[in-house]
Image (tube, rainbow, N blue to C red; front, side, top):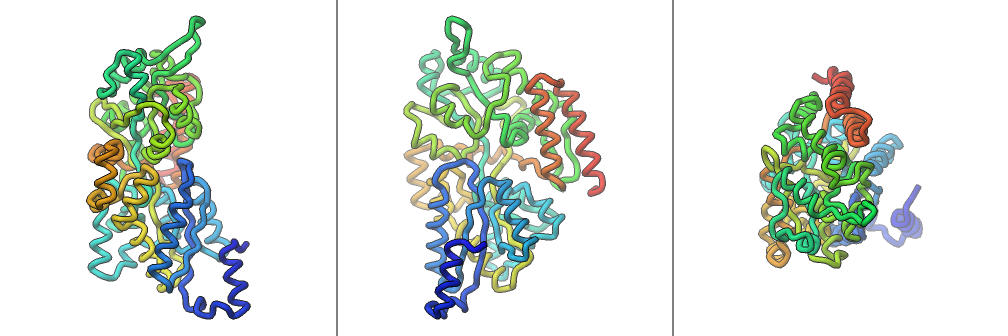
Length: 426
């Protein structure tokens, strides 16, 4: 089906009104927005700027929904014979896309020393989900870590120092108890903390595991560590926040509505993507802070978000045009623009040296928290057949948080299921 832009182009070509268009390189790109907000307008503006600077390239940038939608639509386009030439997709889709032989490494497309210098310009922690076997398959665009948002006004009301958020697991429990408020009947009016357990529960859990000194998988995506004692202890701690310490609901905490719950002051603390930062900044009617996640053995958060991928079904001209588009979208000034508009971090040190982002972070220091947390970050859970493996872990998390199984039993089952799938890739 033609969209409006392409439909208009076909009509104009048929009428002989844009003969020069036939010389243009055509690109189709899918992209997701997972944290809500009018961010498609920002992307549209960046694409318009690229087309103005590159009149020989025409880009059809298609908003695809969330990350899963973007993957489904991109792969469906490949099968239909009308493939996109590039897309922004989950950074953790890498192994699956390689198994499908759908993408090409950037190393095979870059041609100049300047290209190679650009490819080495990103934060190393953001490249962990983009590199395999010594090649770069994904380039960071809308990247994040999980950060802790907290309501300073509620801290003050509870007698807590609003400039000293909890720094470790014990303090999270202690502060959570002071911040949880109940009415005379014992019903909770205000929770101390909320960690979302839908949407991307494996991502939140990756943070807890890292804070307890363990990661969820190996770099090759062929082994998981779900039944490691430190991982089991991390899930038991998450369960205890609701079931034992009563600072968090014991039922499901929705990813999609948690930001509004925080803005409505139904919880004093929330863990969420830094991609929500600008929306919280623009909508909170109270004093709030942003901090790194609390540590146990060490601080920690997985990185998250989307990378650019280049698809194999493209002409040499399209690959070069796609490379130029990715370079344009990830250039320091655009990375700064995207970070300010969204809350996602700048993907390179150079982005934070632009006048725009320097000025912004001076006046709004919370915008630096996710970047500063990168030194403690680890890769997001990514394996071969990643969707199936993630579901095994998500099911184990849900079973534990709902009290249906112990953390040890649930994660032991998830590990056996993952082993059964990943054994063939070792």
